[in-house]
Amino acid sequence: MLRVDLHLHSNFSHDGRSSLQQVVDRARECGLDRLALTDHNTVEGALNFVRMAPELAIAGEEIKTLEGEVIGLFITGRVPPYLAPEEALDLIHGMGGLTYIPHPLDRHRANFRPERIEELAARIDIIETYNPWCDASANQAASQLADELGKVMATGSDSHSAEELGRSWMEIEDYSGIHDFLEKLRYARHVVTASSGTGRRA
Image 1 (cartoon, rainbow, N blue to C red):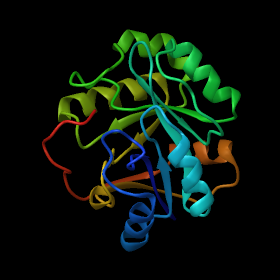
Image 2 (image 1 turned 120 degrees about the vertical axis):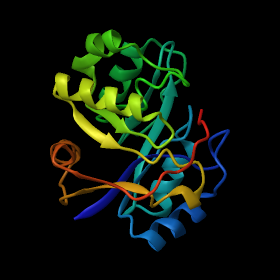
Image 3 (image 1 turned 90 degrees about the vertical axis):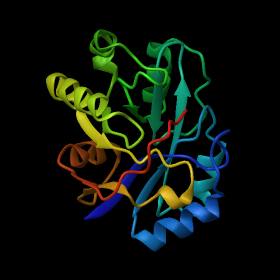
Image 4 (image 1 turned 30 degrees about the horizontal axis):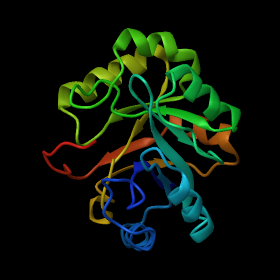
């Protein structure tokens, strides 16, 4: 089984505190097998990460749209911020990537209304249903919405420093290709070992 974290940041994000090497070292220390680096509005760090540790890295980006935030996974280039959500999601799929909605109902951050997620559902592959920086009620609501829409669910650490890695992850079977990854993720075991804190994240 592979231990996977699909939502984390490095110092290529404005609020990230760790270098790529620190992220790699911490992943090895806590036995993580795949990490999606999803820095805010940039893919530069993620592409460097893929070159540095190809067996570990998934290239991603967390993009601020005109409404909520979306993440692209397995992408090959940058998706610019402040697009309509439909346009951002279509650009991700146009690169052959997967679309992931982080902290979808968190009232403390840019978020989508539930009815908006329903409107966008055909373009969404994955919904984050556990984020340690979200209120429990927001995580529960996200889980219920993902279940109603039949979407693959994800636990993301939303780590902004290497020290925060390894507190939550998913365990999936090994996969061949992006579509197989999505299918294996549907049956993932979600593991949460500790709360990351009570602060808020951007």
